[in-house]
Image (tube, rainbow, N blue to C red; front, side, top):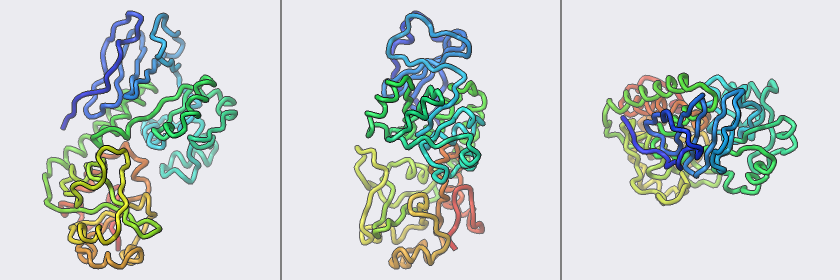
Length: 361
């Protein structure tokens, strides 16, 4: 499988240097990386921001465009507020580049991140909207990696930049293909001089994806949702990256046109009656524990709403639940797709657990 297209980039560095090569991308469209002489790298993001990665011991080239933000290697004491990025640093064995976290220890479902915070190797420095500026300055933080949520706190971005801290906004959630999100590991590989490791990790996920896709369409229908504390069903929007994973795995999402495709919201809240009429005959149910909290039994599911007892998937024992770390493991989306495929194809009929999924008993 392949994709095409990438973020539109402005005209080079602006100082006459020629691009030696550009990073090959298969699915990602929200960033590009251009390689220049002597190890310099220009990263361009879809929001128009640009960063020049400067090799250790090298100087800022003269005459580069004023909009380009310099990042000096080795990158250390990073403030990480974008939760989707932590697994990428972890996979690249580079958690030591992160000193400050926008998420507390108990908010991480990545074992190595929790351990690093428990041992004090990574410290909590306030959430994205309320960072501890004094702490960031005390550790000479050169870079804040933010999610798109920083758009709701533009004054924080302005303050960080005023203090001389570069703000890099991870835009992986804007990728249209699930593996486009995973391919952001190549960008972080460029930041950390670990391109070879990033390429190998990405290739593993492509192999999982291709195995799942080559298995073909199962013809099975699936509902993916959780039930809120107020009793409403919260389902994934049609065309969302999770529903695309289900379809790549050979399943068919029960909702054809749920939600507004023009909004960035990934879920839709609906009343149980509407959900019942659409999803009652779904072959499989996948309950989203990442938001609704983990449950282990069918009885726990039915306690949320007794109507679920009438669902075909419940009666046939085809109810699976996501593990809590699913949304923090963007490095493993190919393997997640393969797990879905094994469920839909029947390969998992005799299993109670798969990577990132387990069956309700």
